[in-house]
Image 1: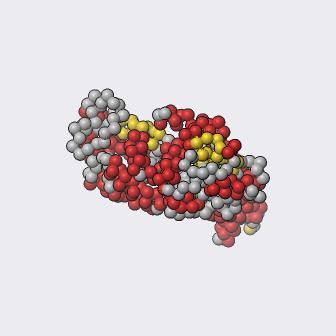
Image 2: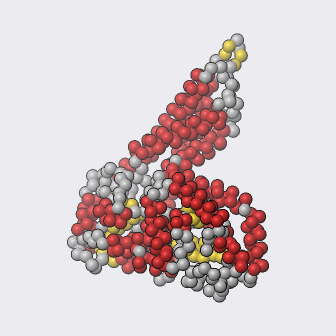
Image 3: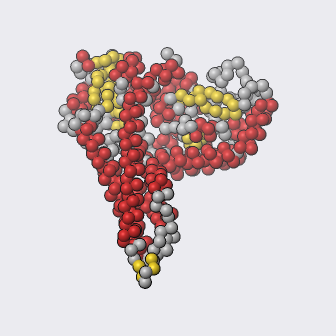
Length: 488
């Protein structure tokens, strides 16, 4: 089965899980919009009653400069942006109430400061005490209203999950001691953590002690079983702690676009560390979890969009010039498109300026570029030296297929080659690939599989230390590399 056919055949059963998360996220967004409207109305009433009622010799001392009715649209949009930026909508289910409290407190506090300086700072007042009072009341009203509605929805959702009214269809990979232990823990929970066990996936290498009637098949049957059962979660609980075996399983699971959880001891073998997210229920760790905090993930996405838009606008004359030069340099298309493997193993079409003489293989030739490669056109050599051929990838960034910074995406052919030697390659699939990366900065282009693996080590280190600050450093070093002409 080809990779393309595999992906097209496994996306459909995931729609149910995807829709469930989209609906839950939409509920939080709608509640936040309603809360912002209600809070803004209450705050306006407060301003009218408590402040604008102050008169001296029949002269009103306070008169707001903003228009209440016009801001009924602008203010909710502002708060939606603040809440999105905080990362609150990144997780639809299994929200921690403690984290929700502090996340709401923080986002409302900073949002209130911005709103105060945008709308209220220029209001004419008699005393500064009105400024302080306005800010305190603004913050208090928004926090109380927003958190109350959020808490209500989270409590209802959590109650339904704990009482098994709601759940997520789950498979357990393994039929030995670990699998039975996890299964027994899940079904014996007084408060369900949301796993609805549909059955087990066996591997003939290990002993079977679970109920054989619940074994649905083996690893080769995963595609069929996930489709038939509408599986949303997979728990890996095999008895073998061999890293290569674990990564072999992970490499198969990434393509199914489901939540992948491990029992802590196996997860520790894979990545060497565990982050605690909940304190109730069966202890499981999601291997797809990005180590970058939610607010940084959304800030990074915003940064990607802004830089990509500005980059395309500011370099548009250069892009036009390069497009003309490519077209005049040789026969063929201006842009080169090639399938690469992206986030969670999903393929996408990467876009570049064509730097080679067009061949009949149309980008499917599995031959990496070498120094003084005879296939490269004269203008192509210049573009590759200064990495100008990668400017069109800003379109991939805007589409959400790539990020400015992240592990470089490879063709499936080379991914398969890499996985044979370094099965831990699958770890980089939990973040979006990037136009540049720490591996590109430290190592540069890789024209052999062995060099790809060496560069991969830098990308793994990046994954373990990912942050906005590190991304900025990588971008700065990349710009330095571009101006020095150190491309291939």
